[in-house]
Length: 302
Image (cartoon, rainbow, N blue to C red; front, side, top):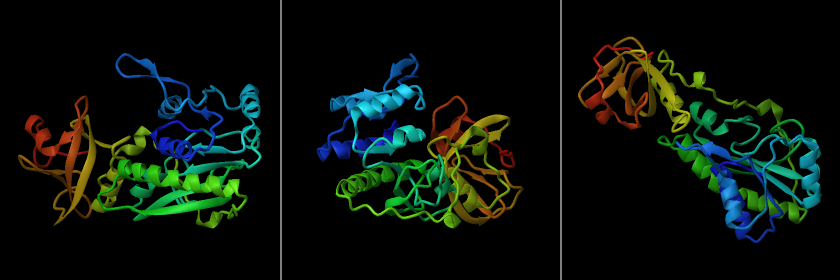
């Protein structure tokens, strides 16, 4: 059970290792592109490519969906980037159901673990497989794998790394459960932290902070949903920055601009913007941006 690109490597590795997939459950097709034509989810595309039956329920709580799963008589349900399953569904398989979560649980429970780990400046993150129970992201831990978070990583690069690492962990977890060797470990709630869903208003940059904190905020929201600020009441999205050693010499949010660079004062040092997107335009380098967009020294980003 899964929907986005993050789940595709996990499905692929199970198929490649000849596990019989009774069915794939994914979200309904959605309109995409300028023509708003219905398009399948990435997981559905992978399933169809390998002739795996696909279920796309509108509601997971509908009794008919649970009936469909019972008819499949699965040994195991593997969940990767999907919706919250009701107990009537996740208790059906004889070996249970497990989820792949993109954090080192109990850290970063919630919908946006990758984003929040980077926003908070973590230098390490990882993935966890855990058994499903009624309380979300709190089931017994089966396996974990860790990866470093590099200074130039963002949410997109970490997402891609964790998708591949996660697939390996899913494969090993399935084998453990198949062999009856899984030993779930209870999560320590005292070590838990939250990673709630991120909304548009959460993405606005607050310039009255140190440069490194703003830099991590930008990385944690890049490439999507993207950190933003306002310049002359127009939205500008910011995708990549570097922290400069030069101390700030102006109010937080005020800019220091040349023909090719755009630096912003913070409460510590200057923050240099490297990639940006003006509202209604494409993403571009700051050098290209400055050739067609007027920014004056002392202007405020708000």
